[in-house]
Length: 237
Image (cartoon, rainbow, N blue to C red; front, top):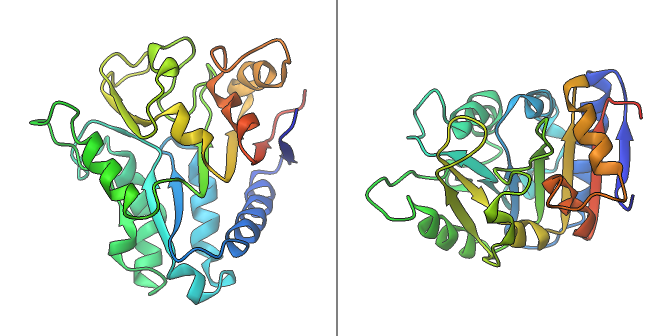
């Protein structure tokens, strides 16, 4: 396995270690606009709480260069209880804004546009392009089946060559309608962190670690193609 491992069975310590690494990677970036992509889902909650409580450890000047995008989203309005962005905002982003670390202009929710054929994916691409067109750091919560973002094992979207955002109407995991970063967009990231948290993710983690398995079997394996990948886990092999 090429990726670096961060392991701890104590979740508070695990996420604390992750924040240290995340801040170190951010500090090494010199771009005027640094793009960080975040997922929804349960596994990211502990990290977001750690980020909010330790925000002062990152220099204020650096905070001013950060731009946050969603790595995946459900096709719902951003004020919906099902919105990934709403969860992330309430757990983390709102604290950053209140503390004066970032402005709301640095937050980039996916805006669901049901009247558009692609539901707003191309508009979101334009927004990302205005910030450089790539993710500098991408955080991925990994599902029990090994999916990352809304890229599922053996799903047709895995074969897409598009570098940007895609929508799907047949997600194996409810709700069926979602937006996701494409595999090719994820591959261009500088740093990727994949979270395998909880015993329910053990099979996915073992598939990820298996040299006999491909991205089609476990889309989270995309981090092995990225310049700097980290596996964050509380699972013993």
